[in-house]
Length: 363
Image (cartoon, rainbow, N blue to C red; front, side):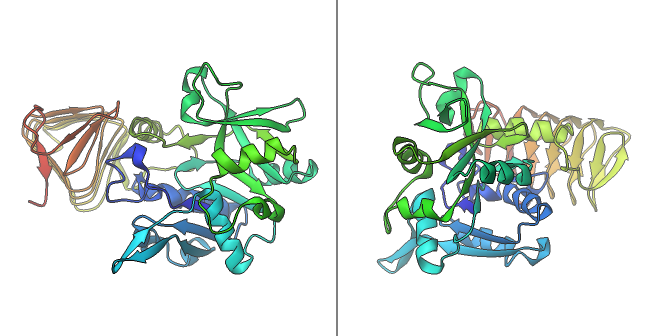
């Protein structure tokens, strides 16, 4: 089960028109990496709950045959005043609705959030879950104590049995620094505890219930890459790590024309006058004018145009972004409409309060 019905409000404007699982890394949606990882472990049947801009997820992934899996969708919403309105039921509520409809969760189920990239050993996690006789398991990782307010925090005893669950506590209130990674393993009876037809959340409602009733609910602590995109600043940092080649099985697309410089098809670049220091990817149909400087890690989306003498440092440009002549863009994520710095501050194109000048390369 991939949870993909949320709005992704904390990473706006990246998710203003795009579902969070569709936010791209190396030109691929985050959720595609999840599906590829599940397929490597032989997971064949995948349900996805969807709501906001659901058609963008459904149109891209279809029935899943490209990845050798079967994908199904459960839309959460209603028709009101002649329009279809998204109405997410919460992570647990959405699963209960699917179970009541078809009994899909009649076997042990892996549940993942659709907005993080992982390389978890799924077989090992399932083995530990079964060995402990768990009804529910949550995979955890330690986080710095000053960041616990961004996560669901798990408190467990020496055997790993969860004694309490705190949803985004303050550093002063946190009783642990082990964060839920949004990776769960459930037995079918867990869903019997979820009230039907109601909004119900896994982290803030189901997990505290399991702990309070002292049911066999266990935490697993594993060493693996967990790339969570909870905020815009996380997205910028993730892209920097991926472009530097720090994450396995995430290879740069295109053709390497110089050490650390990859390009797509149909690019126009004045190689004699530009200064490009990798790692850098330049997408197809992109024009790089004379005198441009690009310092990686940087991603230049397809159809972009970098005007003469401009500079792009450690940044991500989405497709069809035009950087104005002589402008400097450093440590940002930019699209034809908005620009977000690594701290999450957003500026929109045409805002006269900023010195940045950019626009749409198609204009």
